[in-house]
Image (cartoon, rainbow, N blue to C red; front, side, top):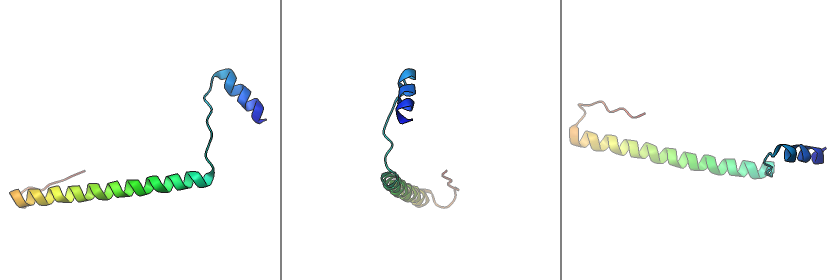
Length: 67
């Protein structure tokens, strides 16, 4: 059945690629999630630093909103 599927893919010029094993995919997902979390924390720190800088320079007169 696999060889038939390959023949169909070849007939239509479809790209073929290997799918990593489940464990390898989970490891990669975990790495990416950790990287996202680190960058989100960095972004939160940057936003807080900007807010603190503005409060220091302008005071609490302006409501600063970051999305």
